[in-house]
Amino acid sequence: MNWREYWNGPHPIYVNQRHHELHFQLIARDIAALFPSAQAVVLDYGCGEAWTAGDLAAKCAKLYLFDTAETVRAQVAKRTEGNARIQVLDEPGLAALDPHSLDLIVVNSVLQYLSRQEFVDLLAMAKAKLKPDGALALGDIIPEDANALSDTLALLDFGLKGGFLFAALGGLVRTAFSDYRKLRDTLGLARYSQAGLLAILRENGFAGARAAHNIGHNQGRMLFIARPA
Image (cartoon, rainbow, N blue to C red):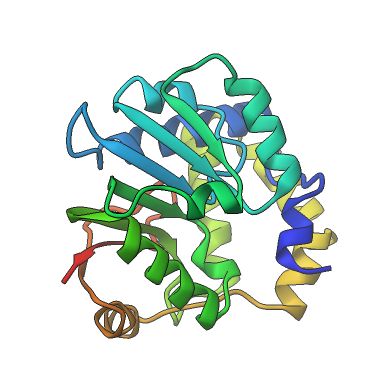
């Protein structure tokens, strides 16, 4: 199994419904704060389940949703059907987007599952699809010196503040014996130093900077905002 196959199937990432709801509410709030205007055309690359896509679409002119997992795309397309501001894209649909037509591309909690070449390919796509003054948001980047303990503490803090601490503790036990943990141990997760990530951006035609606040609850991870150079 690889990461794409894992996300294409059932995966018990959320410890309970409260965790699920708060997670997506927080992600939606932080992503919407990146929208340059209510007229923005936005791509959420690696959108996942996109439970708050309707809320995001209400704050921009057009929201494209893309995920490499076919089952996820199908579920999102069914759930968002009828919303004229939302379009779910497969690989050919993503490739067919007009050049330099996007104001913002959000890539949140994705880079850790990509190889270096896949990251470079993503940057080439972003360079081709963003407007000259558009922005690329790379969120939830794992620092080079991070470890599993930092993620654990972030989840427990989120659970304490969100009212699901005991469920979070139980979820950590389940995760320790899950396919996710096995894949994390065998495939690993991509990690970046701040300087290393900025260097990759420069090498691929972007000027970037680290933002003060990451997307989501885990402020031990990083958000970078980059623009075509």
